[in-house]
Amino acid sequence: MDIRHILVVIDASREEQQPALERATQLLEHYQQASLTLMLCDYIPALDGGMLFESHALEKARQSLLEHHTSYLEKLAAPLRSQGVQVDITAIWGKRLDRHVLREVQARKPDLVLKTTHQRNPLKRLLLSAADWQLIRYCEVPLWLVKHGENPLKQLCASVDPLHSADKPAALDNKLIACGHELGQQLNAQLHLAHCYTPLPRTMVFDASVIADYEGYAKDVKQHHATAFSQLVARSPADGAATHLLEGDPEEALPGFVEEQKIDLLIMGAVSRSRLESALIGHTAERLIDATPCDLLILKPDGFVDPSKP
Image (cartoon, rainbow, N blue to C red; front, side, top):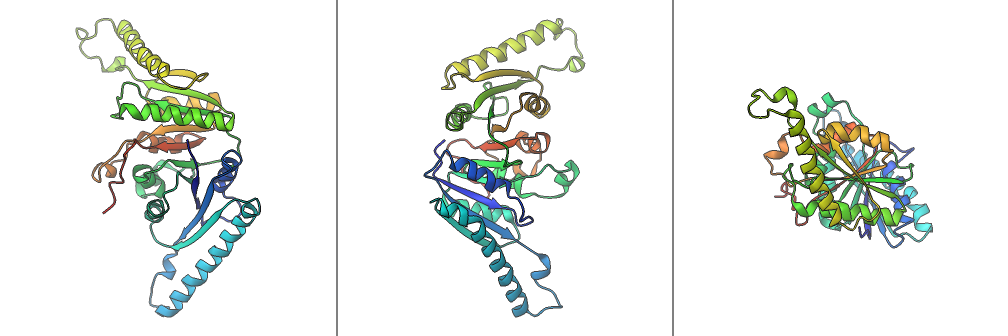
């Protein structure tokens, strides 16, 4: 994974700790030629109009807020600049964080976007169009969602789908493995490869004549997936990677696996989605944000173009 420019999304709601920046600082130890852009986007509804304030007063208040954020970004950038890192900063007033991040991606062409994320209540996710979900769907470059920036990266896992049951293109698996392999080498971390498979549940077999021997059927399904998984690994550059064949849907099997293996970074693919499809909540990577305690790195297939662009 060639990292020369990282876009770090600074969380406007906190000033004490910035996990995404902490993770970027760790990566800079291994990618010493990389530059950073620190962006902070903030929006306060009370400063966006109303009967109590005149327009020039609101504009002055917004400008004062941006000056405060710019000063904060300069403070964050100073220690990195003193170490020779090139750091640009930008403070933005805007209502939709995800749209402003995507605009910065288009303008600056970073190799990686780092953003702090938080585990949320599933109901809240249904009620709100959070920036994380939109970025997973539309960000054209690798998106690294950080939960614990201070944790060292020792165990990496790429989740692959060699039978492409989730409509992911075959080349995406190769990209996930190559990314995990390169990161593992750079960070001196152990790489794991995981593939989840799901046989038809016994309770769904209503006609015994269709699957008379369920145990034999389940064994055949497992062998079919194991063979495809082994063939994928054999074609990959991931020498020394630990392989894991997990029974169950990814959103069910991976969280427990991540905790058991103490995975620090889960690398997953996200397929291109149209505007209509993006309205549906059911994306595996999206669901795993709330279910797993580790960082998540989302990759798109080569040639992916943000379908939300005008």
